[in-house]
Image 1 (cartoon, helix red, strand yellow):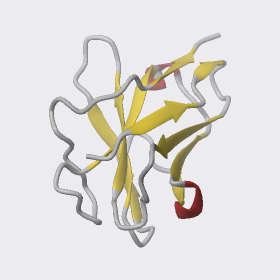
Image 2 (cartoon, rainbow, N blue to C red; image 1 turned 180 degrees about the vertical axis):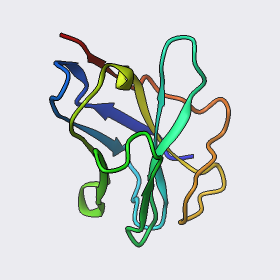
Image 3 (cartoon, rainbow, N blue to C red; image 1 turned 90 degrees about the vertical axis):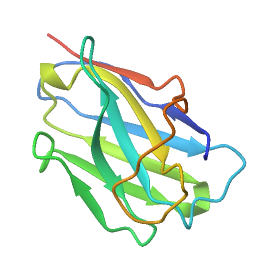
Image 4 (tube, rainbow, N blue to C red; image 1 turned 30 degrees about the vertical axis):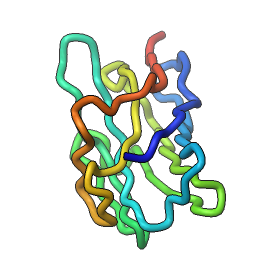
Length: 124
């Protein structure tokens, strides 16, 4: 499983924007699908967006039209542009590849994979 470092989270007012980044440490991402997940307090972790090795992407209904995933393979980095943020978007955000290393979405990481993630708090 590819190891990532997530960054870019913070405190933002409702309606604001953030761009999250996740960079793979010491790995080339070209052939991997990568998913962005989030976990809010008291809730299960959920996949919210995913990008395949050939940059096909999807997003769940709750973020569709507001969140946009992209990748820069030269930088081994996947981004999540988050616009029109809502309080219910507050969560720790993580990225991950599939445990089997596949190149298409969705991705299912190992249960024990998760890194530190990056905290997003949407509040006035």
